[in-house]
Image 1 (cartoon, rainbow, N blue to C red):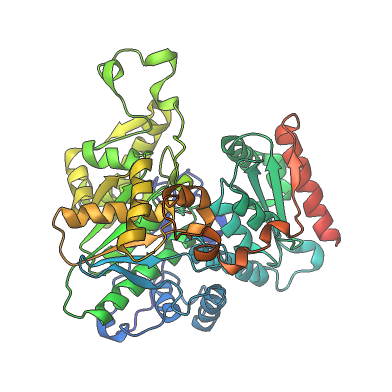
Image 2: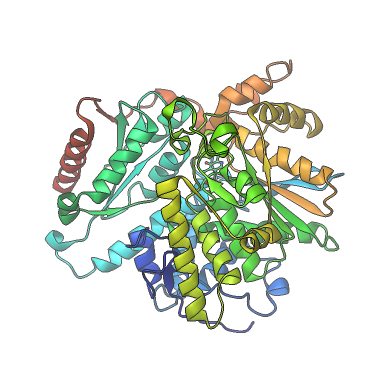
Length: 534
Ligand SMILES: *Cc1c(COP(=O)(O)O)cnc(C)c1O
């Protein structure tokens, strides 16, 4: 294999910063100009990868892929290997992310991403991110006295999946505390139990009296609070952290090789991805740009369909503009159209108004299509375009891209929008045609979109990504399968790990509505201090 030892650096999508190391990018999360970090160059696959990687394990693939994005001077190969080993040792399936064939006649497959500790795909990234944080901190603290040690405070808000995956990724890690806020009483009982029964001293659950948006506002306020930041080094684990995208590239390769081993003559492969913040599918785009022969990436959305609307119209708008408003008239009820909220659906992990990682794709589209001249001027053009679009999103609730940018986006991606009714019908349908396979509502959106893609005449393999285990979303699953006499949720769906979970001791601090941000700040300060004293 051609040896490739890149010195990989990172830049911001808004053009304000260049030449960051991987470590900086992971610890910062967001760039100072408000942009997201992307690699200055997407590495090409080494010569012979198709044969030399064909029989590698998930862990070996991960090491090979990560080495193309992380300079060996930053993380020596032996350390990287150990980080990867540790991150995926917590998975229950030996192949980590197995690809199962759901319908051999139509070549419909499911890439199961839910075999990690919290039974959702976010574990693939957060197990690795947790180990990375610890690795960097321990190294920075190697020669420091106890008083000088850098301590990282990770703060996040969750409506379910992210919070539990973050907690399981960060529990027990050295020099790091994690605070996860959830809206009290508003997340599923399984998710609440998953999070609050983790009793490690560095894990802190805050049940906030309010909504998920209130929790997010508190996170933003703490990050913006200069006093607070003077004494505490804050970090985020939300889906914009570059390490999360990187970690997710591996399973596209793993699935590709699994299918090729099963059927070497099959040429075409499409991935259908249940999409919210665009992190999961963006990893597929990186895989494709690196050289993995993916025929198409299909974005499957629920009724929060900003991406679906973008691919139809070239307009990225928080709110669909209809009727009089579209013609320039006043939107109803004096509410600015773009201030309307998120729709609650049966697939809550995809309930978003805007997709934060979409900004990264926009940068590449602008770079390829609008840019000209040398690489430096292409980057400049891309940064300026992205900056302008994102400002318009903030001030006007949306923006439109030039025709050729949209055309470029359509070269790689297609989109499908799936309603709640179709989600339920797909769970019911798959249970019948896939011999009792039980889909969770997010994975069902992927399968519903995959079925449409097949119907439209797509040839070759169609792989839908299964992003959560059905036991996490019992409400929708039981609703869809209520008529199936032989179906028994506890017997057929519930994993043994969930039995008795609800009865375990819990640790959670309630933040009362009247205490608001001050209440949150006080809890964080007190609990970090108490941890240090322990
Ligand atoms: C987070 C999540 C998604 C959406 O993934 P993005 O990377 O945000 O697009 C889909 N399904 C489940 C179960 C999730 O937890």
